[in-house]
Image 1 (cartoon, rainbow, N blue to C red):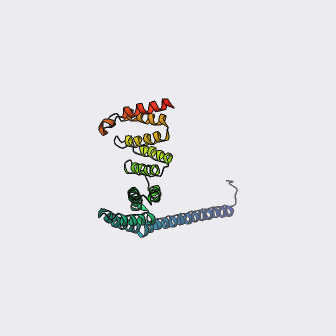
Image 2 (cartoon, helix red, strand yellow; image 1 turned 135 degrees about the horizontal axis):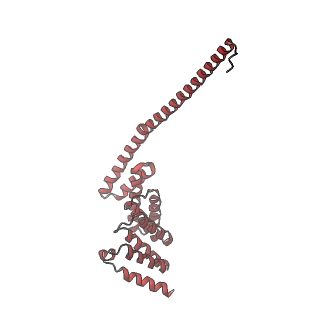
Image 3 (cartoon, rainbow, N blue to C red; image 1 turned 30 degrees about the vertical axis):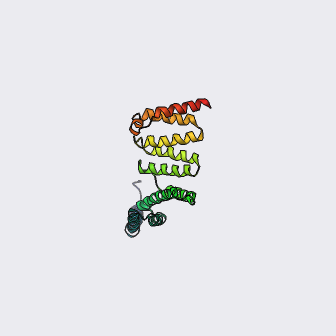
Length: 234
């Protein structure tokens, strides 16, 4: 800064700089205030959702599926089915998810005893199984296996095989369930004439779960040799 600058000009410059700094500070404080207000509004909306919507919704879903469970435990399958379907169709949350699976199980069971409406019940069971979030390694895998059973019963072997493969993958190498699902997949492979895939599955069971056959009273090696012979004969 020049030493020859007029004192009044210097004072005016310093005053302008101070005013600019005050304005900058005021703008910053205003922005900060709006950020705080926005954050507070978001928190309020979250609290409203949790306490006014989500928790009452969960409680209502739990109450509804409790009624369905009671009907099911009393052997009132048809009543329970209606109730499970209502919960699955009208609620989310864990209750709605479980209701979809339970509805599918009852529909599949009813299909086995109803030759006239069998296909329709199997199709409906599949629709509810598709609603079910199958992540858990035992129940989730079993739900995929059940979907495979539905498809096989409908004559859709390709989709059935796909579901059994998904079930085996979901079951996370469970020594009781994974080879069981692999056996089902191999059975479908045989029906499809894919004996190489069938043999590969039996070999995988022997390699990964060597005790399974003895535990279940199954001669896996016999099935393997049969599949290999069929593959060679093609």
